[in-house]
Image (cartoon, rainbow, N blue to C red; front, side, top):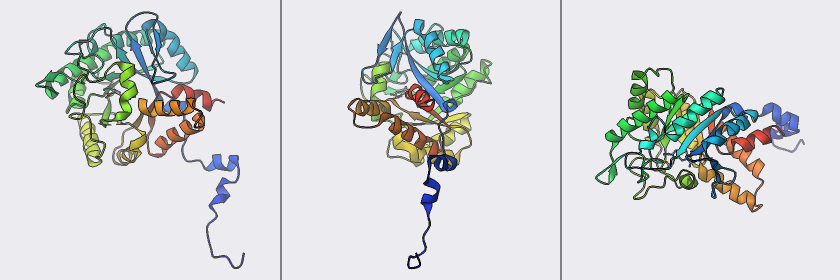
Length: 326
Ligand code: PBG
Protein backbone atom coordinates (compact mmCIF):
# COMPACT_ATOMS: atom_id res chain seq x y z
CA UNK A 1 0.00 0.00 0.00
CA UNK A 2 2.73 2.43 0.85
CA UNK A 3 3.89 2.55 -2.77
CA UNK A 4 0.47 3.32 -4.22
CA UNK A 5 -0.49 6.85 -5.26
CA UNK A 6 -3.52 8.36 -3.52
CA UNK A 7 -6.90 7.55 -5.05
CA UNK A 8 -10.58 7.50 -4.06
CA UNK A 9 -12.43 4.30 -3.16
CA UNK A 10 -15.85 4.66 -4.79
CA UNK A 11 -16.50 0.94 -4.43
CA UNK A 12 -17.07 1.40 -0.67
CA UNK A 13 -20.62 2.54 -1.40
CA UNK A 14 -21.32 -0.37 -3.75
CA UNK A 15 -20.33 -3.22 -1.50
CA UNK A 16 -23.73 -4.80 -0.77
CA UNK A 17 -27.31 -4.57 -2.00
CA UNK A 18 -28.30 -2.79 1.23
CA UNK A 19 -25.49 -0.28 0.85
CA UNK A 20 -26.44 0.34 -2.79
CA UNK A 21 -30.08 0.89 -1.99
CA UNK A 22 -29.12 3.26 0.83
CA UNK A 23 -27.20 5.55 -1.55
CA UNK A 24 -29.52 5.19 -4.56
CA UNK A 25 -30.42 8.64 -5.87
CA UNK A 26 -33.46 8.00 -8.06
CA UNK A 27 -36.46 5.70 -7.77
CA UNK A 28 -39.46 4.62 -9.77
CA UNK A 29 -42.78 4.86 -7.97
CA UNK A 30 -46.16 3.94 -9.39
CA UNK A 31 -47.40 7.45 -8.50
CA UNK A 32 -45.15 8.75 -11.28
CA UNK A 33 -46.79 6.80 -14.10
CA UNK A 34 -49.46 7.68 -16.61
CA UNK A 35 -50.69 4.75 -18.70
CA UNK A 36 -51.85 5.45 -22.28
CA UNK A 37 -54.89 3.56 -23.55
CA UNK A 38 -56.61 3.34 -26.92
CA UNK A 39 -60.40 3.34 -26.84
CA UNK A 40 -62.00 2.09 -30.03
CA UNK A 41 -65.58 2.68 -31.12
CA UNK A 42 -67.61 -0.53 -31.33
CA UNK A 43 -68.49 -3.40 -29.03
CA UNK A 44 -66.58 -6.24 -27.38
CA UNK A 45 -63.36 -5.28 -29.11
CA UNK A 46 -60.00 -6.11 -27.64
CA UNK A 47 -57.47 -5.91 -30.45
CA UNK A 48 -53.83 -6.34 -29.62
CA UNK A 49 -51.75 -3.90 -31.67
CA UNK A 50 -49.36 -6.09 -33.71
CA UNK A 51 -46.41 -3.72 -33.36
CA UNK A 52 -47.04 -3.22 -29.61
CA UNK A 53 -47.29 -6.62 -27.88
CA UNK A 54 -49.25 -6.30 -24.65
CA UNK A 55 -51.09 -3.14 -25.77
CA UNK A 56 -54.66 -3.41 -27.05
CA UNK A 57 -57.32 -1.17 -28.47
CA UNK A 58 -60.36 -1.74 -26.27
CA UNK A 59 -64.02 -0.81 -26.67
CA UNK A 60 -66.05 0.93 -23.97
CA UNK A 61 -67.41 -2.31 -22.53
CA UNK A 62 -63.89 -3.31 -21.43
CA UNK A 63 -63.00 0.05 -19.94
CA UNK A 64 -64.29 -0.52 -16.42
CA UNK A 65 -62.43 -3.79 -15.90
CA UNK A 66 -59.29 -2.26 -17.40
CA UNK A 67 -59.49 0.63 -14.91
CA UNK A 68 -59.97 -1.74 -12.01
CA UNK A 69 -56.96 -3.77 -13.08
CA UNK A 70 -54.87 -0.60 -13.33
CA UNK A 71 -55.93 0.62 -9.89
CA UNK A 72 -55.15 -2.77 -8.37
CA UNK A 73 -51.65 -2.40 -9.82
CA UNK A 74 -51.29 1.06 -8.29
CA UNK A 75 -51.67 2.97 -11.57
CA UNK A 76 -53.76 6.07 -10.87
CA UNK A 77 -53.69 7.99 -14.15
CA UNK A 78 -54.53 7.12 -17.74
CA UNK A 79 -54.07 9.05 -20.94
CA UNK A 80 -56.90 8.47 -23.38
CA UNK A 81 -56.56 8.18 -27.15
CA UNK A 82 -59.64 7.64 -29.31
CA UNK A 83 -59.99 5.39 -32.34
CA UNK A 84 -63.25 6.56 -33.96
CA UNK A 85 -65.39 4.54 -36.36
CA UNK A 86 -65.53 7.44 -38.81
CA UNK A 87 -63.22 10.27 -39.74
CA UNK A 88 -63.71 13.51 -41.65
CA UNK A 89 -61.76 16.54 -42.87
CA UNK A 90 -62.32 18.51 -39.65
CA UNK A 91 -61.82 15.69 -37.16
CA UNK A 92 -65.34 16.15 -35.81
CA UNK A 93 -65.00 13.01 -33.67
CA UNK A 94 -62.50 14.86 -31.50
CA UNK A 95 -64.97 17.43 -30.22
CA UNK A 96 -68.51 16.01 -30.48
CA UNK A 97 -70.27 15.51 -27.20
CA UNK A 98 -70.56 11.77 -27.77
CA UNK A 99 -67.03 11.31 -29.15
CA UNK A 100 -65.26 8.16 -28.06
CA UNK A 101 -62.88 9.88 -25.62
CA UNK A 102 -65.74 11.90 -24.13
CA UNK A 103 -67.79 8.70 -23.65
CA UNK A 104 -64.85 6.86 -22.11
CA UNK A 105 -64.12 9.78 -19.80
CA UNK A 106 -67.72 9.94 -18.57
CA UNK A 107 -67.70 6.20 -17.97
CA UNK A 108 -64.44 6.24 -16.03
CA UNK A 109 -65.45 9.21 -13.90
CA UNK A 110 -68.75 7.49 -13.08
CA UNK A 111 -67.47 3.98 -12.42
CA UNK A 112 -63.92 4.49 -11.19
CA UNK A 113 -63.76 8.16 -10.15
CA UNK A 114 -60.41 7.86 -8.37
CA UNK A 115 -58.71 7.25 -11.72
CA UNK A 116 -57.20 10.49 -13.10
CA UNK A 117 -58.17 11.00 -16.72
CA UNK A 118 -55.67 12.82 -18.92
CA UNK A 119 -57.24 13.65 -22.29
CA UNK A 120 -54.89 13.87 -25.28
CA UNK A 121 -56.07 16.89 -27.26
CA UNK A 122 -55.31 16.43 -30.93
CA UNK A 123 -57.19 15.93 -34.18
CA UNK A 124 -54.97 13.40 -35.97
CA UNK A 125 -56.87 10.32 -34.82
CA UNK A 126 -60.11 11.87 -36.14
CA UNK A 127 -59.15 13.54 -39.43
CA UNK A 128 -59.45 11.64 -42.70
CA UNK A 129 -56.04 13.01 -43.77
CA UNK A 130 -54.37 12.11 -40.45
CA UNK A 131 -52.91 15.55 -39.72
CA UNK A 132 -53.19 17.22 -36.32
CA UNK A 133 -55.24 20.16 -37.62
CA UNK A 134 -57.33 21.28 -40.58
CA UNK A 135 -55.81 21.51 -44.05
CA UNK A 136 -55.74 24.62 -46.23
CA UNK A 137 -53.50 24.83 -49.30
CA UNK A 138 -51.84 21.49 -48.53
CA UNK A 139 -50.64 22.52 -45.09
CA UNK A 140 -52.11 22.53 -41.62
CA UNK A 141 -53.79 25.87 -40.97
CA UNK A 142 -52.59 26.94 -37.54
CA UNK A 143 -55.24 29.41 -36.46
CA UNK A 144 -58.21 27.54 -37.92
CA UNK A 145 -57.01 24.40 -36.15
CA UNK A 146 -56.78 26.24 -32.84
CA UNK A 147 -60.54 26.87 -32.89
CA UNK A 148 -61.26 23.14 -33.18
CA UNK A 149 -58.63 22.23 -30.61
CA UNK A 150 -60.16 24.65 -28.11
CA UNK A 151 -63.57 23.03 -28.73
CA UNK A 152 -62.00 19.61 -28.22
CA UNK A 153 -60.44 20.61 -24.91
CA UNK A 154 -63.70 22.10 -23.60
CA UNK A 155 -65.68 19.02 -24.61
CA UNK A 156 -63.14 16.82 -22.83
CA UNK A 157 -63.41 18.94 -19.69
CA UNK A 158 -67.22 18.83 -19.92
CA UNK A 159 -67.01 15.04 -20.02
CA UNK A 160 -64.99 15.12 -16.79
CA UNK A 161 -61.33 14.96 -17.86
CA UNK A 162 -59.03 15.87 -14.97
CA UNK A 163 -56.15 17.12 -17.14
CA UNK A 164 -56.07 18.42 -20.72
CA UNK A 165 -52.96 17.34 -22.66
CA UNK A 166 -52.70 19.07 -26.05
CA UNK A 167 -50.30 17.24 -28.39
CA UNK A 168 -51.02 18.99 -31.67
CA UNK A 169 -48.03 21.38 -31.83
CA UNK A 170 -49.97 24.33 -33.27
CA UNK A 171 -48.55 27.70 -32.19
CA UNK A 172 -50.62 29.23 -29.42
CA UNK A 173 -52.42 26.04 -28.45
CA UNK A 174 -51.84 26.52 -24.74
CA UNK A 175 -53.03 30.14 -24.77
CA UNK A 176 -56.15 29.37 -26.75
CA UNK A 177 -57.04 26.22 -24.82
CA UNK A 178 -56.39 27.89 -21.45
CA UNK A 179 -58.62 30.79 -22.46
CA UNK A 180 -61.41 28.51 -23.71
CA UNK A 181 -61.31 26.38 -20.55
CA UNK A 182 -61.47 29.47 -18.35
CA UNK A 183 -64.38 30.95 -20.32
CA UNK A 184 -66.28 27.68 -19.96
CA UNK A 185 -65.75 27.66 -16.20
CA UNK A 186 -62.88 25.14 -16.07
CA UNK A 187 -60.29 27.42 -14.45
CA UNK A 188 -59.16 24.55 -12.24
CA UNK A 189 -58.46 22.02 -14.97
CA UNK A 190 -54.70 21.96 -15.61
CA UNK A 191 -53.02 21.90 -19.01
CA UNK A 192 -50.28 19.33 -19.49
CA UNK A 193 -48.63 20.64 -22.62
CA UNK A 194 -46.73 18.53 -25.10
CA UNK A 195 -44.47 21.56 -25.21
CA UNK A 196 -41.47 19.84 -26.71
CA UNK A 197 -42.61 17.32 -29.28
CA UNK A 198 -40.17 16.22 -31.93
CA UNK A 199 -41.08 14.96 -35.37
CA UNK A 200 -39.98 11.43 -34.63
CA UNK A 201 -39.78 8.01 -36.24
CA UNK A 202 -40.36 6.62 -32.74
CA UNK A 203 -44.11 7.28 -33.16
CA UNK A 204 -44.55 4.61 -35.84
CA UNK A 205 -46.25 1.91 -33.73
CA UNK A 206 -48.60 4.48 -32.13
CA UNK A 207 -49.86 5.41 -35.56
CA UNK A 208 -50.75 1.73 -36.10
CA UNK A 209 -52.54 1.70 -32.74
CA UNK A 210 -54.41 4.97 -33.30
CA UNK A 211 -54.76 4.76 -37.08
CA UNK A 212 -53.31 8.26 -37.35
CA UNK A 213 -50.62 8.02 -40.04
CA UNK A 214 -50.72 11.18 -42.20
CA UNK A 215 -52.20 10.35 -45.61
CA UNK A 216 -49.86 12.82 -47.34
CA UNK A 217 -46.68 14.59 -46.30
CA UNK A 218 -45.39 14.46 -42.76
CA UNK A 219 -45.61 16.46 -39.54
CA UNK A 220 -42.38 18.42 -40.00
CA UNK A 221 -44.09 21.82 -40.40
CA UNK A 222 -45.47 21.59 -36.88
CA UNK A 223 -43.48 19.04 -34.88
CA UNK A 224 -39.87 19.88 -34.00
CA UNK A 225 -36.64 19.02 -35.78
CA UNK A 226 -34.78 16.36 -33.75
CA UNK A 227 -31.55 18.28 -34.28
CA UNK A 228 -32.68 21.26 -32.21
CA UNK A 229 -32.09 22.15 -28.59
CA UNK A 230 -32.63 25.90 -28.24
CA UNK A 231 -35.92 25.55 -30.07
CA UNK A 232 -37.06 23.19 -27.30
CA UNK A 233 -36.37 25.87 -24.73
CA UNK A 234 -38.30 28.44 -26.77
CA UNK A 235 -41.26 26.08 -27.02
CA UNK A 236 -41.21 25.36 -23.29
CA UNK A 237 -40.85 29.06 -22.46
CA UNK A 238 -43.84 30.14 -24.53
CA UNK A 239 -46.00 27.36 -23.13
CA UNK A 240 -45.17 28.43 -19.59
CA UNK A 241 -46.04 32.04 -20.48
CA UNK A 242 -49.31 30.85 -22.01
CA UNK A 243 -50.25 29.01 -18.82
CA UNK A 244 -49.05 25.39 -19.04
CA UNK A 245 -49.11 23.56 -15.70
CA UNK A 246 -46.93 20.62 -16.81
CA UNK A 247 -44.40 20.31 -19.65
CA UNK A 248 -44.03 17.10 -21.67
CA UNK A 249 -40.86 16.18 -23.54
CA UNK A 250 -41.47 13.60 -26.24
CA UNK A 251 -39.98 11.15 -27.16
CA UNK A 252 -38.01 10.46 -23.99
CA UNK A 253 -35.10 8.17 -24.60
CA UNK A 254 -33.21 10.00 -27.34
CA UNK A 255 -34.06 13.33 -25.73
CA UNK A 256 -32.91 12.97 -22.12
CA UNK A 257 -30.58 15.93 -22.59
CA UNK A 258 -33.66 18.02 -23.35
CA UNK A 259 -35.50 16.62 -20.31
CA UNK A 260 -32.60 17.78 -18.16
CA UNK A 261 -32.50 21.26 -19.66
CA UNK A 262 -36.22 21.74 -19.39
CA UNK A 263 -36.07 20.50 -15.78
CA UNK A 264 -33.31 22.99 -14.96
CA UNK A 265 -35.01 25.95 -16.60
CA UNK A 266 -38.69 25.66 -15.62
CA UNK A 267 -40.37 25.05 -12.32
CA UNK A 268 -43.39 22.95 -13.19
CA UNK A 269 -43.66 19.15 -13.18
CA UNK A 270 -41.77 17.69 -16.15
CA UNK A 271 -43.19 14.68 -17.96
CA UNK A 272 -41.20 12.30 -20.16
CA UNK A 273 -43.21 10.44 -22.79
CA UNK A 274 -41.68 7.00 -23.28
CA UNK A 275 -43.25 6.60 -26.73
CA UNK A 276 -44.48 3.64 -28.74
CA UNK A 277 -41.28 2.98 -30.71
CA UNK A 278 -39.27 2.93 -27.49
CA UNK A 279 -41.68 0.27 -26.25
CA UNK A 280 -41.81 -1.84 -29.39
CA UNK A 281 -38.03 -2.05 -29.79
CA UNK A 282 -37.67 -3.48 -26.31
CA UNK A 283 -40.56 -5.91 -26.74
CA UNK A 284 -39.13 -7.18 -30.03
CA UNK A 285 -35.69 -7.73 -28.56
CA UNK A 286 -37.21 -9.39 -25.48
CA UNK A 287 -39.31 -11.75 -27.61
CA UNK A 288 -36.11 -12.82 -29.33
CA UNK A 289 -34.42 -13.45 -26.00
CA UNK A 290 -31.76 -10.85 -26.80
CA UNK A 291 -32.08 -8.74 -23.66
CA UNK A 292 -33.24 -9.00 -20.07
CA UNK A 293 -36.49 -7.07 -20.44
CA UNK A 294 -37.14 -6.36 -16.79
CA UNK A 295 -33.66 -5.03 -16.07
CA UNK A 296 -33.51 -3.05 -19.28
CA UNK A 297 -36.89 -1.39 -18.82
CA UNK A 298 -36.28 -0.48 -15.17
CA UNK A 299 -32.89 0.93 -16.19
CA UNK A 300 -34.22 3.08 -18.98
CA UNK A 301 -37.19 4.40 -17.00
CA UNK A 302 -34.91 5.22 -14.08
CA UNK A 303 -32.68 7.11 -16.51
CA UNK A 304 -35.68 9.34 -17.27
CA UNK A 305 -36.03 10.13 -13.57
CA UNK A 306 -32.30 10.79 -13.36
CA UNK A 307 -32.59 13.19 -16.30
CA UNK A 308 -35.13 15.16 -14.27
CA UNK A 309 -38.54 13.81 -15.24
CA UNK A 310 -41.11 13.91 -12.46
CA UNK A 311 -43.66 11.83 -14.34
CA UNK A 312 -43.43 9.19 -17.07
CA UNK A 313 -46.08 8.33 -19.63
CA UNK A 314 -45.36 4.72 -20.53
CA UNK A 315 -46.89 1.61 -22.06
CA UNK A 316 -44.65 -0.32 -19.64
CA UNK A 317 -46.55 0.96 -16.57
CA UNK A 318 -48.34 -2.37 -15.98
CA UNK A 319 -45.13 -4.36 -16.35
CA UNK A 320 -43.34 -2.00 -13.98
CA UNK A 321 -46.07 -2.35 -11.36
CA UNK A 322 -45.65 -6.11 -11.45
CA UNK A 323 -41.87 -5.96 -11.33
CA UNK A 324 -41.76 -3.45 -8.47
CA UNK A 325 -44.04 -5.60 -6.35
CA UNK A 326 -41.96 -8.77 -6.83
C1 PBG B 1 -51.04 12.69 -31.44
C2 PBG B 1 -50.04 11.90 -30.70
C3 PBG B 1 -49.00 11.08 -31.19
C4 PBG B 1 -48.44 10.45 -30.09
C5 PBG B 1 -49.12 10.92 -28.97
N1 PBG B 1 -50.08 11.84 -29.37
C6 PBG B 1 -48.59 10.71 -32.55
C7 PBG B 1 -48.02 11.64 -33.50
O1 PBG B 1 -47.75 12.81 -33.22
O2 PBG B 1 -47.87 11.18 -34.60
C8 PBG B 1 -47.33 9.44 -30.13
C9 PBG B 1 -47.24 8.56 -28.95
C10 PBG B 1 -46.39 7.36 -29.11
O3 PBG B 1 -45.67 7.15 -30.11
O4 PBG B 1 -46.44 6.56 -28.17
N2 PBG B 1 -50.58 13.77 -32.13
